[in-house]
Length: 142
Image 1 (cartoon, helix red, strand yellow):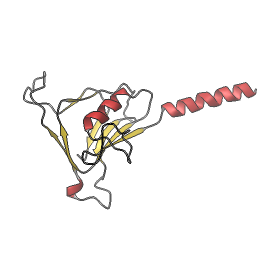
Image 2 (cartoon, rainbow, N blue to C red):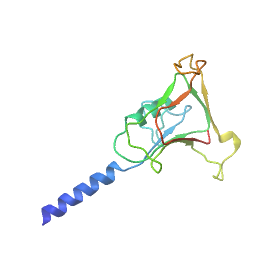
Image 3 (cartoon, rainbow, N blue to C red):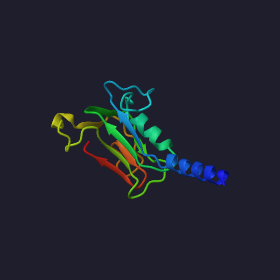
């Protein structure tokens, strides 16, 4: 009986850990791409955050929070996570400070600028900043 309870608890814990949502923080001024992407140790680039997000397995939503300021894309950014996404479990790129926050001002809105060269093989050959190659991805307040 004890073995059954321990096995059941282990299975439930494993499923709970697989279903954890993850949040990565990006701050080009104070971040470092060698960091873990936490609020206290943000990535410097959106490229690194997307690369890490694309490698995630298991279940749970993925949120990339952009600090205020300019986020420069030096190459095409392909969002295509391995993790299973759905209508209720999404990959979201959003501002760290949202318009509903009391400290929000227009100056706190992150700006994404692509300086990538002509790297598009699609019908829009002039430039591509972000290629969303997966359903259930949301870009908001950037």
